Image (cartoon, helix red, strand yellow):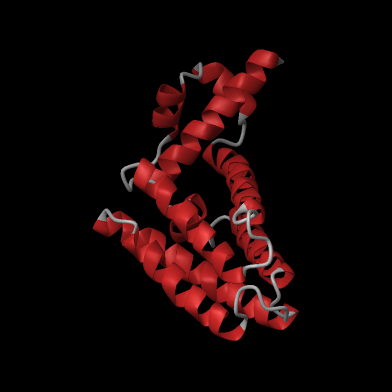
Length: 198
């Protein structure tokens, strides 16, 4: 069981990286098996429904990791919404820079390739993005925004961050995340100045 779980973890991690680098459609099972080092027989035992089943597990892992990041960013200043937004943007920009701007968003890449052809994937993608938006809204709400304001800002911020990932890959620069951080922080600080109770 330990070996099976290790093989499963390696396969999911490898698929996640490849989906982020080259997309869902461009990633074949043979490449995932080869790069993960999984024996072919055990791979099909672990993922009897093939790539779609593997993608569901990638989405579960990836969306949970993203939500955890969004919940813990900017904890050093828990009352400052602008600082939170900057921390989120800086963290995502740093991750992309560390990868040489090779890693896109697994959920966005799968969505562009397969979302509406595979109902299970479409449902999981919707749930993942909803989880991220709710995490953003929750953190903004605890930092002084009304629930309605936090929900709307979270939706706009998530859309901007997904766009920033694409531009960052194309430009090979974290500048798009810095632009998002400046715009949204200025907007929030104008309505909810740091240090002032709301």
